[in-house]
Each structure stands twice: as structure tokens, then as C-alpha cells.
Amino acid sequence: MNVDLVSGALGAEVINFDLNYLNNKNFEEINNLLLEHKVIFFRNQSLTLEKFIEIASMFGPVEEHAYVKGIEKYPQITRIIKAANEKNQWGEGWHSDVSYDLTPSKVIMLKSLKIPPIGGDTVFSNMELALETLDEDIKKIIQNKKAIHTSNGSKFFVENYSKMESNGKIGEQYSNEHPIIRTHPETGKKILYVNPTYTKKIVGLPDDESSDLLNYIFKHQERLDLSCRFKWTENAIAILDNRSTQHYAIADFYPGRGLGHERVMDRISIVGDKPF
Ligand code: SIN
Image 1: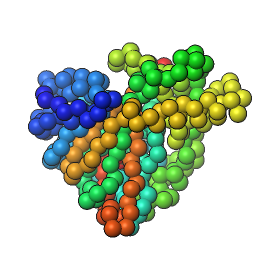
Image 2: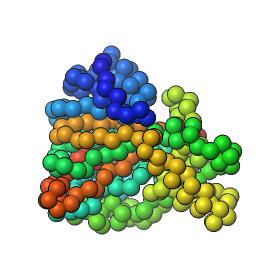
Image 3: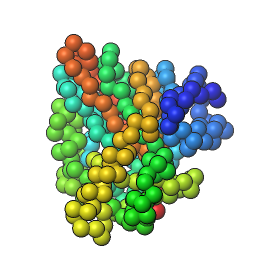
Image 4: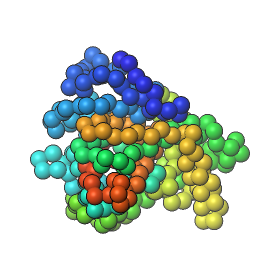
């Protein structure tokens, strides 16, 4: 399979591959590309919803979103809709999906259904590189430490987005602790596993020390040389390793440019392991 690298840090676009032809024989090749590049992209994919679920299921069992209602008949698929007149969008801000879960999602698949003529790109960042490039003294401090990840409750996912609905299962916030340096269960590589959207505190440190240290790490994680940026076209697919990356959906919808246009994505996620 041919790929075009998206940046020096991560990301590869797989050229001329129709995901309808993904099967048990070529799956390993795709999974290896995912492990190597951390996020892989495919353009011009025409997939039924059933096929979308079938492809996702090759990575492991698919799951429903903790807070958000899925689409009719396919609750595993969350349709992320930014209404034409909305300036904000779901997924804005650096995060690793549902890191507050006991077993945060392993892989996320996104499929673009409707894309504004300009704006709404997604940026991805390599958290193995973030760890490698982190100051050695900071690495020593966070070695063997855990952090608390807290969800923002269902309101966070639905309140500012007119088209998003809660699944009504749980409304409130909940937390789980995970190692700040986690190990990738498939490659054994070490990953910097905190993010500014959900990580609230380092276990065992006083509040002020914890927040100074987390703010330092969050600033480091934002470094552009750890990232790649994907410009969506309709019917493109991103498959991202949610263990070793963070992402950020850019809400650059301004009058005379992207504002006034819908952005619609289908999202599906695969059950992950408990970080160790
Ligand atoms: C997300 O953060 O789950 C959505 C990303 C996107 O819409 O680009």
C-alpha cells in the first residue's frame, strides 16, 4: 500500500485503497500502518453504515459513546453535526477521547459527510514524541505517577451544539486514574497520557504543584512540531490510535468564510484496555 506522509511527526494518507476491500488478509497491513503513523487517512470512501461498523469491528468490539445518542438503528455511530450558523464545534480543544473512562477507546474512526468550503480541519498530535521530547527532569517527576481524568458530564457534549443529543444514560461527571506515562499495549512504546480537556490533577501532589506541572506538560503537548493537520474532503476517513495521540477539531468558522455551512462527521469508537 502506498502512503503519503502528512507531517514529520505523524499521519499518513493511504493512497488508492478502497476500505470496502479491507479483509482478514490485508487488515494486518492497515493495522501496522496505524501503529506506525498513529493516524491514517483515506479519501473518496463510499461506505454503507453497516460496512463502516464492520470495518471498525476489525479493530475490536465497537462501543457506544458514554454520553451522546447514536443514530437511529446504529447507536454505535455518533453523528457529529455542526449546524451552519454555529461557530463552535464538538471536539474543539486538545483531547484524547473519553480518557476519563476506565478503559478509554482504543481506536476512533471518523468519516466526513459534509465539509464547509473552508475551515474545520482536524489536528492530531503524537504523544510518544511528546514524551520523547519532554524535559528529562519533568520525566523523572512524573515517572510512576497517576493523574485523575474527569468527564465534563453530558452537558459538555450537547449544550453548545444544537444538533447533538444526550443518550440519557448518565448525566453527571465521573473520574478514573491513569498512569501519566502509559505503555502502548501493542507496540510497548511509552506515551505521555494526560490532556488539557479531561486531566484534572496529579495524584499525590498538592493542588498548586499539580496544576503547575500539568500546565507545563499541556503547553509542551501543544508544540506544532508534534502535530499534523488534515484538511477534510467529503467521504474521507480518519482512523486514529486514541492511545498514542490527541486531536483538536478547529472551529475556524467566520463570516464570509466557513460560517454558514454545515460540518457533519460520523464517529465510531473501539473498546480499549485499561491504561498501564
Ligand atoms: C472529535 O473530537 O471526536 C471530533 C473530531 C472532528 O470532528 O474532527
